[in-house]
Amino acid sequence: MSDGAIPKIAVRGLEKSFGPKRVLDGLDIECRHGESLVIIGGSGTGKSVLVKCILGLLHPEAGSIRIDGVETIGMPRGERTRLMHKFGMLFQGSALFDSLLVWENVAFGLIQGRGMERAKAREIALTKLAAVGLGAEVGELRPAELSGGMQKRVALARAIAAEPEIIFFDEPTTGLDPIMADVINDLIIKCVRELGATAVSITHDMVSARKIADRIAMLYRGKIIWQGPAGEVDSSGNPFVDQFVHGHAEGPIQMEVRAL
Amino acid sequence: MLTFLASVGAAFFAFLAATGRLVRFALLGLGAGLRPPFYPRLILRQIVAIGYYSLPVVGLTAIFTGMVLALQSYTGFARFNAESAVATVVVLSVTRELGPVIAGLMVAGRVGAAMAAEIGTMRVTDQIDALTTLSTDPFRYLVLPRLLAGLVTLPLLVVVADVIGVFGGYVVGTMKLGFNAASYLTQTETYLERMDVISGLVKAGVFGFIVALMGCYHGYHSRGGAEGVGNATTHAVVSASILILLSNYLLTTAFFGGK
Image (cartoon, rainbow over all chains, first blue to last red; front, side, top):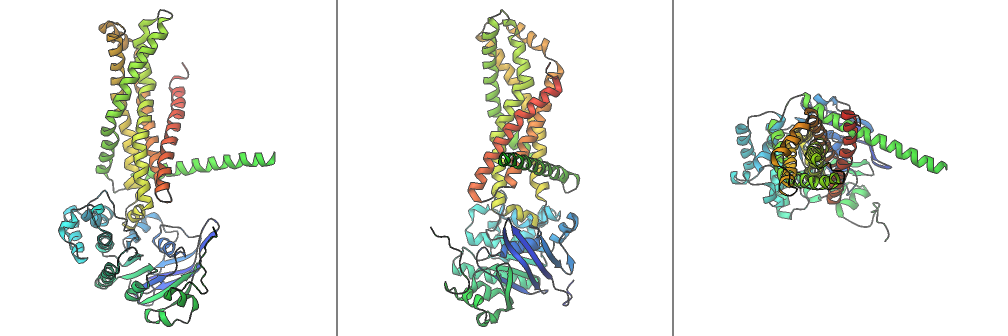
């Protein structure tokens, strides 16, 4: 469903706690079809938790998550598996399966998740590896033999292999040098555009956020405190956003530092 | 006094909750086998990992156990002129108890730890979440093949351990203690009943399941990086070892009722 009136992702009143710590506190956010939404926020503010709730990897205590207008919280297991076909995910640490070859990693969702024949899945995997600038010879290596940047590219190839409708990027440039980070940003933009997919990225890398986002939202204390077009993030008028985007230690956001 | 009772009550409820979580995990793992897709190659790979690669350690422990058992029983029985019972004691002890228990404990140390470390590492590096996002049920892909392989493979290992253990006793009996080879074998065969072997193999199946279950359970729930994986590995081995010894007593009571 690509009806512009229905958001691709709609999150309402989402609450999630770990013990006494409330991480998401009635969070609301929407993402339109084909939009690239970047959620920014400090470490430990719940960005990854939000994405994991949308993916169904974590179960929120309250709220609603709708994909294409369909409620996904409490969805039966079979329907959830089918819903997963819409998603692709690039994990912060790449999360490649180290017991498998690179091409098997890329083709994993096609072979295991969709029952595709290995030969055909391998062909698609090599095409996707080429799309992220990696040759067929890399496909025969193990993930442990690759650099961090190459692992991210493989993870990106895996995320787009099944041509998902929604792709999540969790800190796609963390731990990479600026040049490799820019390469990954360019690949994300290219892949998302070619697929016509909706993209939700979480990052605290403002260079990356400015480059890949159509819209930016800032998460603080379990709520979205500001959202707007990517071009307006530097003139948001919100002191929390200003402090974050300029990386100032002084401001309304106080880091929780325990005295020694 | 109230504080003490409250602590006991809390510990009891925590035990019940942990048992419930473990049973739920086992049911989810086994229940995953009721629906396709199935992964026969993964089951075979686990059978090789559990069975074939454990053969040396299980074989070595079995042969030395059989040898020591023959020596010790000879020393004890010689005190009341019952040396001829050595072969019978060796074969009954090995097939009923020592074969499955020793093999179970060895496999818990070798395979249970490896399972917990592998699945724990997959957990802390988001690989299990990645499986889910790739439309693959982690219970079907990771847990079920290990549970089935544990259930099937340990009895096979115990058959080998039984043969090697009895052979160890035979070697010591004939070469060191001076038994006649033919009469030692006759004694071994005469008093061995089918039920002795079957009970040992059933125990082995239960122990194999326990080892795989504890390895998967603790690995799947590991948290907090390398330390968490280390803790999961320790818990997997310790809990599997305790459960093996506990279930061994319960199964022995069920099979033989203390006779």
